Image (cartoon, rainbow, N blue to C red; front, side, top):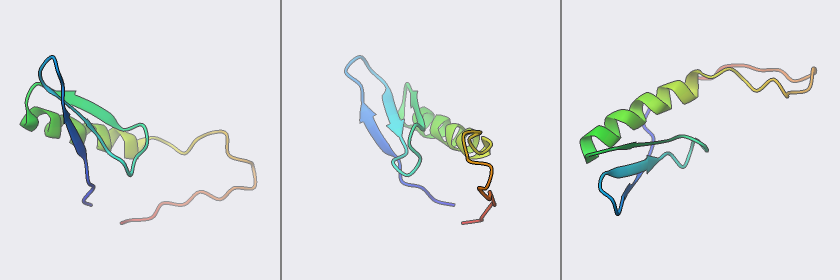
Length: 66
């Protein structure tokens, strides 16, 4: 799977990074390389989270591979 990430150079040093396709998926690092490594880990954690429990009882949850 390939996802686009957006990196921002921070005023106080380092970089913050977000994944537009995964709302709420953010990370940071002291260097570009560290920020990219950290966002990969954040993406894995984000994708491993279970479906929200606020779904109605009639909702059907399935996994799809992309």
